[in-house]
Length: 101
Image (cartoon, rainbow, N blue to C red; front, side, top):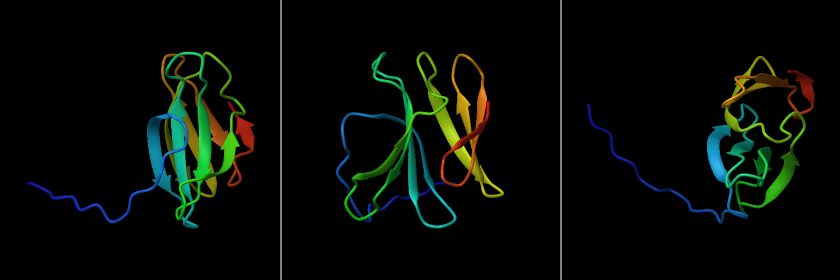
C-alpha cells in the first residue's frame, strides 16, 4: 500500500535539536523529544507552541548525560520515555515531572 503526504503547516524549529519523537498529546499539546546529538548538547523533552514553534517548556529531569532519549508515548495520563544505549524507561506525569526511572 502507498500513502501520500501533504504539508499543512511549517513551523520554525528552535535551535538544532536531534528530534527523536514528536507526539500530539490528548490535550492537544505538541511534544518533542531530542536526543543528545551532537554529543554533549543533552537530551530533552519540550512542549512546543503549535502556532509559533517556540518552546513553552523544556524538561531535562532524568535525562542527564550520557542519557540519549528516544521516543515518548502517552498512556493513562502519564508519559513514558525510552532511552538508547542504557535501555532505561522513564515515567513522567502529565506535566512532565519525573515520577520513576
